[in-house]
Image (cartoon, rainbow, N blue to C red; front, side, top):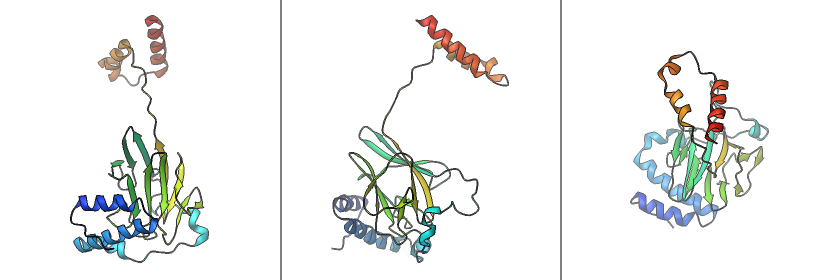
Amino acid sequence: MKHEFHSPDDRASILSAATTQSRDALAGFWEELEVELDAENPEEQQIAKSPTLTIERDAQVTIEPPPGMPDAKPRYVQGVVNGKQVCLVTNLLRPESITLRQPQMVWTIGRNRSAALPLQDRKLSRRHAVILYRQDGFYFIDLNSMNGSYINGVRVQQSQKLQDGDCICVGGTRFFFFVSGQERVTEALHPEVLARLKNAEARNGEFIDFSELNEEISCNLNKAD
């Protein structure tokens, strides 16, 4: 059944229904959406429409970061759960980290710009995989991609729950996945410590000796007791 995407709300409602069905249904949704977006911006689809480069099987689990970026900082995706608010934080799309929110809590990975994580990687399929959130955590699903997806060196066959620190490899892109589902509030600093940190003379010095600061914190806490 072909869908008509008249507005972002239409897309959201159809996506919500597709995520409760099979992987083929979800893949079909993205295929139809990408056809529409291709018509809107054909120039942006040059990379997305090029054939997917096949990776040798033995090289799947040893893929390195893009050439010319030997000192690139580690790339990551972090799933953050704060009450009913769920989002992804990542530096895959630009040098600085950004937060990605998605109403159905389904983030797609692929070469097309309709993806939540659109990566210019010709070894990726246009609709490569998705990260979705369920009540018990984040899951990774490969959408029958040509080169497959790997978690900790093992090819993903079905839906796999993600663990903190997992290494994910999709196409020629490798990144780490982290989960943040707990929150801890630290104790407030003693007023005397705050006063010293705000003191202009201390800030204008060459450095603040942390050992001295630590001793002061301990001393002040003892006085408070």
